[in-house]
Structures are given as structure tokens and as C-alpha cells.
Image (cartoon, rainbow, N blue to C red):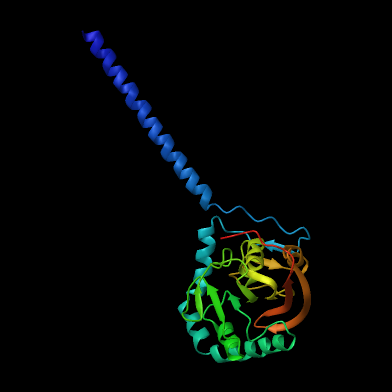
Amino acid sequence: MKLVQKKQVIFKSFVITISLSIVFFLTFASVQRQQRKKTVITTPPAPTGDLRIRPGYNSYEMYIQRQLDKTQNPKLRQIWMTRDWDRKINVFATFFENLKHENLLGNTSKSLCIGARVGQEVAALQRVGVADSVGIDLVPYPPLVIKGDFHDQPFDNNTFDFEFSNVFDHALYPSKFVREIERTLRPNGVCVLHVALSRRADKYSANDLYSTTPLVEMFRDSELVRVKKVDGFGLDTEVVFRKNMMKKNNRRR
């Protein structure tokens, strides 16, 4: 009888040990899966070497928090909404008016400003008559700016006639940034980017661009319209693309 009881105790201990091991294994595996989801796979450099991703981001959450550190900075937001408000709207209004003269933008163009912060670009578009305009940023600023991540725009395919951005340097995944622009642009739609080539962007930037070649390579569904020098609040080059008419975009939300 004692031998039988001893065997039962050993068997129960064995079952408990196996059960605990299985639970531990499943928990560990789940944590590992979640960790892999959070880990950022470093974007490879462009073939030309003229687009370089800045190191230091161990997860996408870390990258987003870094961007929020700037966007939510109360001192900066106060400056953007007061001292810089009229000055930037005036500059952007002149810029958009020139694009209208070049037939790259029209009053009926459904327009998007990417990384719009408090929406000076959107206000400038509306001032020059482009009423159907909106901005996206990680932090919304109604009614001009809605919440959105430019790596995954919250819009359907072929939504906009015109998209503008001066925050390309803040993209951790530049190819995703470009793919989302091309996905949401309508055929024959225009994208205008202001970028820095001859100077390094600010400390919140996630990449450094040294020529327009990587941009041309990434805009696979579009044609380069022109490149010119500008003085755009620390950015020195304007690059314009037009989405091809015949290219069908099969990516759907």
C-alpha cells in the first residue's frame, strides 16, 4: 500500500511539473511573440547610400514617443500657435499660390498636409481657395488636423488630388511613407515634398537624405516633375511628383 501511495505521489509531482513547464513555455512564447512585434527591423539603406536611417530606435513605440516629445512640447506648440502662426501661413500661402499658377494645385483639389502639427499649411491652403484640405499628425488639432500616422495613413486608396509634406526626414520607414502617399493619391495626383539635402535636419529626425535619387527610386508609381531650391523653414529642396494615370493601385485598407 505504501508503495502504491508513493508511486501516486511521484506521478502527481510529475504531472504538476509537466503542467507548470507547459504554462511557462506558453507564457514565454507569447512574450517573445509580442516582443518581436514591437521590435523594429532596421530599414536597409537606399541603393545609392544617399538615404540613411538614424540609429537608436529599438522599437516602433520608442520612435513614436520620440516624435511625440516634439509634437507635444508645450513651448513649441505655443510658438506654433502664436508667434509662428501668421508668418508660416503667409509663407505657405505664397508657396501654394505659385503651385496653382503651375497647374499643380487647384481650388477643387482635395488636399492633404502630412505632419501638419497645428495646421498652418492647411490654413494656408484654405486661404488661397483650396477649401477641401486637411492635415494629419500624431496629435490632432481640430478642425485643421486629424490624428494619423504617416506610415499608415487613415484614408482609402485614391483619396487625394494633392499631398504636401515637409517632414520626410521624420520617417523611420521612408519607403512606407512614400507608399502611403502613392496609395492615397488619385491617378494624376501631385505630391510635393520639402526636404533638406545640404544641411542636416533637427534632432528629432529619423533619417538623413543626401540627394533626390532615393526619392525617385521610391516613387515607383509616379513621375518626377521637377526639383528646385527653396527656403522652407530649414529645408532647402522642393521635389514634385505626379502619380501615373495607368498604374492601378491594388492595395486596399
